[in-house]
Length: 340
Image (cartoon, rainbow, N blue to C red; front, side):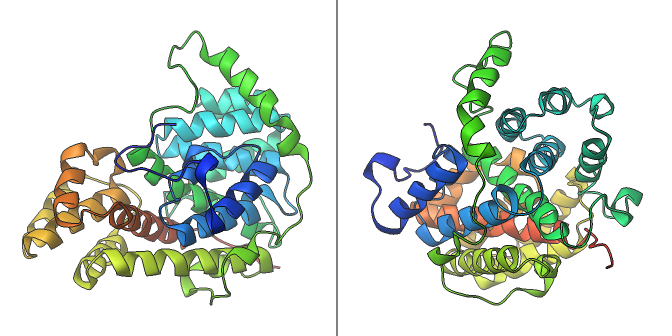
């Protein structure tokens, strides 16, 4: 289990809240996988991360296959190869091998199930605010919280995974081995994927919180709304402990102008703004901005510069989580909830 830049809590040595969460992850997800483990230095953020995932993607009224297809398509959109592999494996485990293969090849027109293909086309447009596909979503008002929640969640998770994990969850990167390895992994997750989950079972991990205005798409599902409200509060507190107020305000201003795409020009312009901060704030602003808008550009030098001023591992995780979720929340404001 290789997680870059810090030392997470291993499942074999977990205690307290982290151990409780790991136990539920193993039961409901099938395995305590790296994307959850990497949050373990901040137990409240781990709790929020799992709650948002479980109540939107893992439990609920919408089929698991539909939500795994959304997760895989959003991950493909963000070029997060680790998450594409992970969620096409889960999609295959849910009984949709055809769709899993088509998403892996980015050939969405090959998806045989028309409804699933429409859902994937919608997910692939979630970073394009004015896309016509988003104006007429292929789901109803009751389904919206789980489906939009899954999309927003992977807008968040893709960013962190891109920075902290390898290119695939598989034990080998050899292309000729991948089909066999994915098939084996799919079989391992089948039981967990197909077992019905009790909605709301994860909400005990964090206290109640108010749902922010930019997460109102979740309000038609009490469990999804409660999970994302608590997740948002945990991430916000982690950001406050890590990033100076001026840095958070700067990143938020950049996100307010963001149209879903990162460009060299916009990042160059941001560098001029960053130059106004002191040295520590500059390191924090660069890491947070790149995590939010260009996670593929977060390289070791950027991380080392941040760690020079903020040496604690929890500070780095807090900065990455806050910035990634800020960007994900912005994408959620582009997604329409159908009328009644």
